[in-house]
Length: 129
Length: 129
DNA sequence: ATTCAAACTTACCTTTTGGTATGTACTTAC
DNA sequence: GTAAGTACATACCAAAAGGTAAGTTTGAAT
Image 1 (spheres, rainbow over the protein chains, first blue to last red):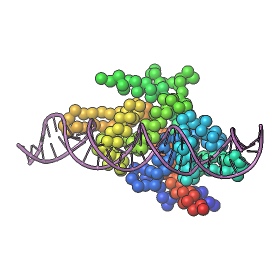
Image 2: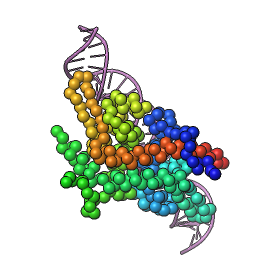
Image 3: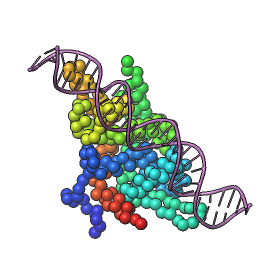
């Protein structure tokens, strides 16, 4: 039986409304400009660094590396490096990351699916005197 | 029958992986430092401005106002102002916002529920040589 | 006449984020 | 011997986000 195999009532729980709660930090990593996009991509399949760059339009090398490190630090992303030359590194979701990615996908899918309604609301809003 | 009462196949859909897609902007609003927290609070009940400030520890007036305006602009939050003195303003979710808040809540709940595992992963990660 | 209250707005400044460009490592191919 | 390929790190700078503090509005209470 592993550490997290059951969620008993003694398990400490985060409280995002509270300043200084560590869950705020995780929220920050994940909702950083590129965090959601990286998780979304990796939910689909394992990617190499350069492939991710092509997939996620607009991300710079620096930011992609930084984002991946943040997510790796939180145990959501797994980095596997093959010691060949030129370098070959593969990124994928950990078990924890896969679990989370379901929520992220629902979240992102909703935005994509409802973008038309949102734009409509934006237009209506800007037509206010 | 209203405009958005059915999602037919002709409905344009966002693509978050693409730069310049308007859904990227919405993602940015919602994943701004305080966006998720505001939606989470309003999912619970209607709040006045000052109540929200107390609820969401750490937000400044400026940022709260700005976040609320962003979400209002996207049609997720509704602002109702009563012309009394001193001012009385109530914030709540629109129908669209309520729909979305379900996803946001799942997303946030996951982090809160799994914060122990994440912290464990963080420690393990930092113990690497 | 002064104070107070709520919901902001604004000016000013600091911190964080993000981009660009360049450097590095190492081996294979030409 | 030089170029190419991959995954970064780093320095430098510009832009954006965010915080603090003060000001605004208006009527009612003291």
